[in-house]
Image 1 (cartoon, rainbow, N blue to C red):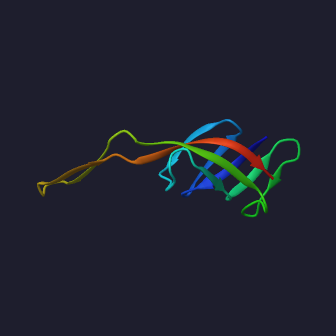
Image 2: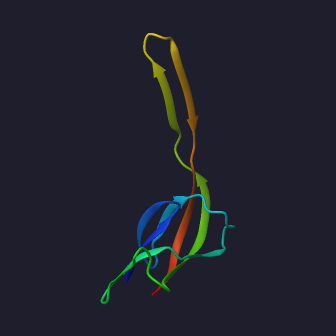
Image 3: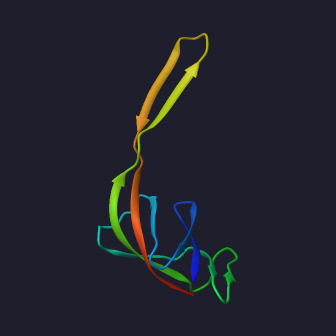
Length: 102
């Protein structure tokens, strides 16, 4: 059984036992969170939501919080001597999928 979930505007295909890396979620490490934006539940009897499947939830455990690789934002305007170089490291949360209920 698998599910397609949405969190922070992005969609992920998950199955029980999978580990996924999503944008930062405000939850402590080791806690359990419930993702209720389930767009589709697949398997023997697939269900597609409009836009979400009613009553379907995905339970996940927060494994860790970490920073991603550095990204550069470079702005440039030709012939104007304008150059700006900024960087940032996005925050990610690693989730381990525990159960999918439909």
